[in-house]
Amino acid sequence: MNRYLGIVGIIAMVFLMNSFENHPFKNSPEENQDNTKLSLGAKTALVPAPVWVIGSYDKNGKPNVMTSAWVGICCSKPPCVMTSIRKATYTFGNIMERKAFSVNIPSEQFAKETAYFGSVSGRDVDKFKVSGLNPVKCDLVDAPYIKEFPIVVECKLVQTLELGSHTMFIGEIMDVKVDKAMLGEKELPDIEKVKPFVFTPGSSNFFGIGEYLGSVSPLTKEVEKK
Ligand SMILES: Cc1cc2nc3c(=O)[nH]c(=O)nc-3n(C[C@H](O)[C@H](O)[C@H](O)COP(=O)(O)O)c2cc1C
Image (cartoon, rainbow, N blue to C red; front, side, top):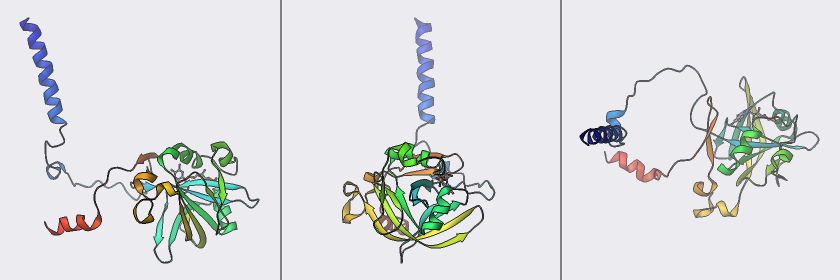
């Protein structure tokens, strides 16, 4: 009996020690933080990168889509967005020819289609047919958008910039269209409804967006109060 109690005691002690080790409040973040930087060299493996899908027509009017992580807003007035694309992609020639593209922002539910759009070429397959998603002609520019994606952006090509492996395409945003159900306050897209996701270059993983952290103005005041 005593031997049995001893074994149970040891197991309980190991369990308690283990849960204390993993407890988030064991040390304050400052105590745990080691800011020693390790140089990784000149790389693009920064986290996170957005994951958007670029829509374009080929010279025969076939709609195509490709996933792009080298993307972002690059001017407020006029509103502009950029995507950097390799010459080897089918999309590259399409945008050069049609002088237009769409940016399609996926929700988490389209993670697998987004992976697929970035893994095969429209030169070889019809990505809309295979994925079952539907192309819709943009109202203002010569490009298709993805009907099922919650946010789509119509862009007119205004500049290209040769950078090396990639050419940056700068598009002026002619219109942003959002599914009604995805709108929140002030008729703006609601991130918690849209559920976009991000990409980790290098390791090639998708991650959802985490929890709400606060609004810019009150957060700024917290630092000023310090
Ligand atoms: C998550 C992800 C992000 C990507 N980002 C880019 C990018 O920013 N620029 C690029 O040229 N290719 C990028 N690619 C690769 C292209 O999407 C891929 O080469 C695609 O097959 C090109 O399609 P297309 O030939 O039909 O244009 C990415 C792929 C994935 C999976």
